[in-house]
Image 1 (spheres, one colour):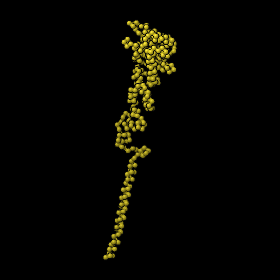
Image 2 (cartoon, helix red, strand yellow; image 1 turned 90 degrees about the vertical axis):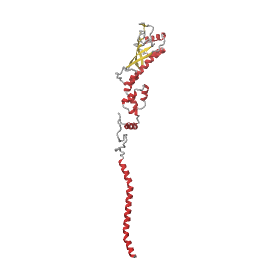
Image 3 (cartoon, helix red, strand yellow; image 1 turned 60 degrees about the vertical axis):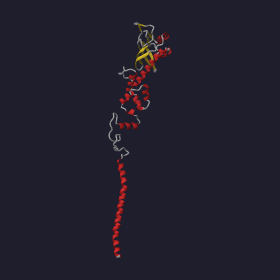
Length: 291
């Protein structure tokens, strides 16, 4: 009995060892497979990402400019493109507008605001120096008579020159109001060809004769505060003339006046003043020399 037991035990030992070995091998294979799966996933995700050198981008399905679904196009690019471009360059949305819209927006600014805008940055300086914007501002502040004029140095320079002439013309009427003979003397060019025609119809030629006429006007006549309207100026490189209506009394009607200025060493000087005559009962009033 004992031999048979020993013999059966010896016969059954090898299969048990083989089964145990197979079980251990299977466990090792399963363990290796489980541990290697995350590595394969990571490598797969990395292979989907674009290279740092600028490979193709993965479609994200959004409406931005990263390669997803296309956004609704605008006049100067999609909304995503405008935002991305403005963000990358540091530009404002104002700077991304098409030129026509920018010019229209700038036409609502006045002279000081447009000058201040040109000092903000290079992009705004280019926009604020646009000839169309200054032409629109000129027509708004002065006159539309000169729509066909093409200024040699552009509309910005032409606006500045016209503004200087209009300012010196306003000084002329301020001097008359204050009856300042010294300032009137500095306003006129010291030349023998200057001329002045007052409202009395008298003509004075030469600087000394013109100054004598203003001295007489300031001594005899009362101070007059003209209300000047319909001012139109035309400016050339060295000469400018201004036409206007000047009211001494709104009930009696205006004087039609023309002033001519010359530019000398960067300063405008009056060289000619001409006023329409004052009529009293259809006759020229010789006592009224203002105008």
